[in-house]
Length: 204
Image (tube, rainbow, N blue to C red; front, side, top):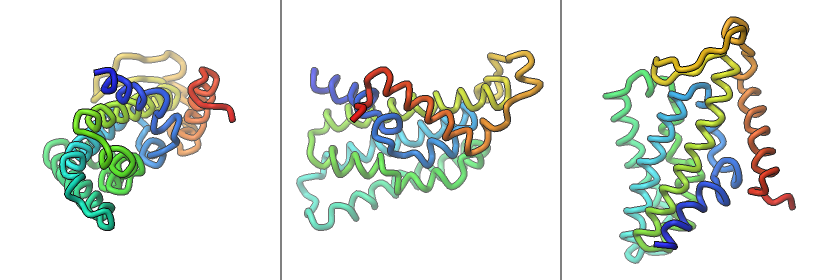
C-alpha cells in the first residue's frame, strides 16, 4: 500500500510530467485555452495511459525485448483510436475543439515514456498507481494553465457552458494575449517558477 501511494504521489509532485519533467507540453500548451479542453484532454490521457499501463504490465513477460517499442505503440494507438472515435460519436464539439491533439496522444512522450520506463518493469498495481499519479499531475498542470488563460483571456471562468466566475472590467476588456500561443508559454513559465520556488524542481 505504501508503494502504491508513493508511486501515485510521485506523478503529482516530484515527477509531474508537465511542471517538472516538461513532457507532453505540445497538447498542454495547444489545447489549454479553456477548462473544457483541459478536462477533455485529461480524460483522454487517463483512458489511454491507464489501460496502456495495465495491458503492458500484464503482458510484459511475453514481449520480446527487440520488438517492445512497436508493441507498445500498437497498444497505445488502439486505445487512442477508441478514445478518438468515442469522442467524435458522443462529444463532437469537444472532439472538434481538441482536434488533431487527440490522435497525437499516440506519440505523447508521457504515454510511451511510462510504458517503457515503468509499466514494462513493474507489477500491475504499481503500474496502475503510476498511471493515475501521472494523469492527476498532468490534469492539475493542464487545468491550472487552462484556468489562468481562460480567466485573463476572457474575463470569465466556465465549464461546459456553466459560468461560475465573471470579473467585471476584465470581461469587457480581456487580455487576449493569454488566448494566443504566447500566453500559454507565459502562464507555463510562471507555473514553472512557482514549482521551483516551492522546491519541487531542483535548481541545479
